[in-house]
Amino acid sequence: MPSEPGASRGKSQSRAPVRGTTPRALTLDPHRYGDGRRDTRTATNRTPGAPAPRRPRTLAGRARRENATAWAFISPSVLIILGLSIVPVVWSLLLSFRADDLVTPGRWVGLDNYRALVRDPGFRTAVENTLVYAGLYVPLSLIGGLALALALNRRIRLIGLYRTLIFIPFVISAAAQGVLFFFILDPQFGVANSLLHHLGVSPQGFLSDPGQALYLLVLISLWSGIGFCVVVYLAALQDVPPELIESARLDGAGRLRVLWHIKLPSLTPVTVFLLLWQLITALQVFDLIYVTTKGGPLGSTTVIVYFVWEQAFQMFTAGYGAAAAYVLAVALLVVGTALRLYRRRRPGAAPDGAVR
Image 1 (cartoon, rainbow, N blue to C red):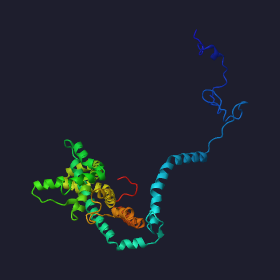
Image 2 (image 1 turned 180 degrees about the vertical axis):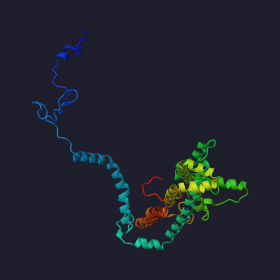
Image 3 (image 1 turned 135 degrees about the horizontal axis):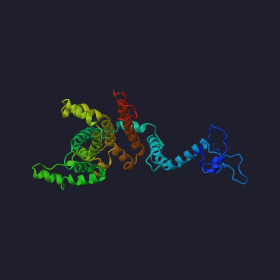
Image 4 (image 1 turned 60 degrees about the vertical axis):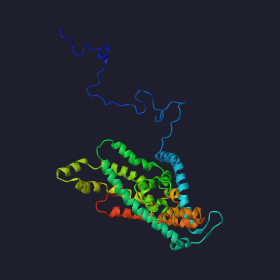
């Protein structure tokens, strides 16, 4: 005789009352966790003696705590910026309107320091030397850096060694470079004149010759500063799309056409950056001149920054030197603004913050 359906089930299941065929929705106690413990923070019927529920944290309180934590972290940097940048800038601006030697009490002279700069032949010579130095150093460093970067952007043997040798002079301090080249270019005991003597060339004055000193300083600066341009151009060349170059070569474009129509346009943002960076570096040159020539001979290597140092700490006319420093600052501001406007008005220029 066949058994009834469900006869083989357990005894407890066979005795469970049948209340209907429609299943009920599963509901959970909102004041209990998954393991059965009760949430005493939100339950209204908490047990006597249980700790009082904590108040929920508001968004405003959390934002205040985060702001306090952020200011605690950045406050040392803010103090350093204010102490070493903002305060000296404001103080030197006020100093440029005073006749002050930093020792005795000064007096307010208004724009007299700036009027005196216009009539000062020493300042005019310093401006001319600075413009000559920057006019030679900036374009030569860019052209040389680009040429070396193109030469080193190939798969040749010992390429890592060549790149390292070109970049090493950049990490050498200007003071060390000045001492090194001072001994090499010494008119009497230097190595350079010894080599020229073996070649049959008459001895040269080098850094002691007013007609050669400034150009030799440009060459020394190029020896050390061109490595930075090479590294930046090498990094930019790695970002040029290779499929674009390959497509141009398949269309019959030679190396010069690929360089002129593909690589150079891709390097334009980097070139503008290097132009501004090298120009600022050239206008601020000081340590190399201080170590090698000290502005001489006959003021032929006196640049604006050295003129400012000379006025402030040798002649103790700090107000006059501060005025010269602000003339240089305004010149740098004008150059930076002009480059920025050029970048904005140039057709196809990327907006600020865009990735090129």
